[in-house]
Length: 360
Image (tube, rainbow, N blue to C red; front, side, top):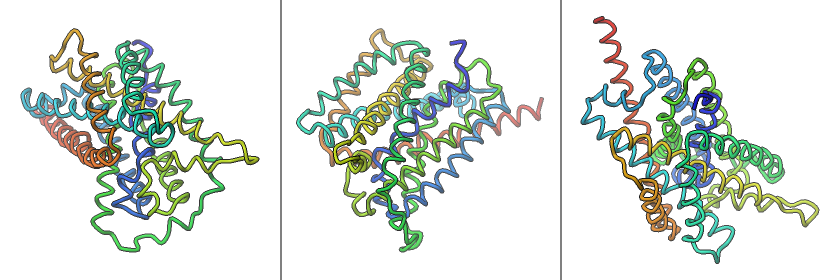
């Protein structure tokens, strides 16, 4: 795709990293409590430094191919194994996307519609989109994210009068405890979704403004997450947030004008359904690229992956309690496979590149 540029990449970062933390924040608020908004700020600062450091390394070494970086850093066999873990996390991300979308719609909107029905209307249309070329992926992402940003901005104004800032305080009532630290790790795991987009870096022809446009994108993501978590905590007390499966969907039900105009659910449905759809498609295309680099191909690979995802998503999403236990574990898996391992790999690669340069 000759016209795929760094501005398009920014939309892919938004698609990958926004929706998880906004949809089920109680996964980490159960650990962080009322101080979860502070944990989000701390995690945001860490992910910003991490993100900029990785992109600067790629620029300094003029290497943007994730597969080459993994193999050059730790060798082909270990590199392929770690890429396999990355691919597995991409698959889990697809399962998460499908399961949460179906579960949230079933739980909050259409209780009598079964989860499997939502999954059928989700995974197969998404497979069609992911099976197209990069032009289709980017087009759907840009349009979808633009509408989601509009919906999010509108909701921020519509729900502002229902928010009470005193619910954010007192801070550190119980000190900096284990739960607060675990919440930071979980938030970092959810932020780690930005690495889903790393396989797309090789598709960009001109990388002149990559760092600038990516920083703008990550800063936009950070402000959205901070506004989202503070908004939820200011709408409900933290004890209530911890007991609501999808607080954003309930928060919008407060919106009412003239006692009959209630459009909050429309905005949040656009955010939830559209956001998860785009995240699923972006992860699917990245998975196809990684599997192709590992020489794992099949004539019907898209159909096979789609069916496996649908079955796994039904198993996860058909029971709300099981789903949230799995989501809790998923945050830690992402922290390791999408942040810790890539960080180690990139540091090793930077060291080896520096040694080769000094020897040359």
